[in-house]
Image (tube, rainbow, N blue to C red; front, side, top):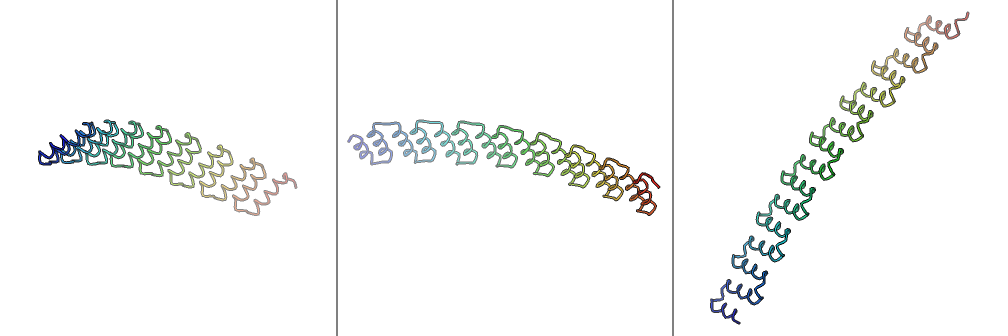
Length: 239
């Protein structure tokens, strides 16, 4: 009744009403904050402070206070998330990402750090940061597969525009540098000529006398003379 009396005697002002509420509720911390809030015109700043004190002044509420007091900016949202999640590395990266406008570069960096800075993610980072070019994709594949010979060949093939020459080289290396693949390489690289096809057959068959004769025959225009010579040699030169 004393409070009510003070309120009425002071013209029933808002300030006195708050004071009345404060005293009637035992002057608690919460009521003091509410009193400050109302007495200052119910501003956003005071409301935030109210929430912070009423909730025990926790770190989370302090962040929320900063967030609201700064107009809820993107930067403050990030900072809030970072602190509220314990200041982890992941949240710090996310903070950097958002604070820099969410650029592709920052997104890549975020992925890399969030995944433990692995070699795979580093390659992906290089790839995206360089515009996702074919060259960088090949390099990514090369590194991700441990720099194997196969991937190196594939890299050369793609980086050179997928030419026939590079395809042959790829086949040759991928098949263990065999004699057969070397012949095939020579054949394709010289335009697939009849001469090279014969040479290929000859080498692929162990360089036999028969294949050498066949080679001579084809290489000299399939003449009757060469056919006879072929028969002669293939039959042991008998009469």
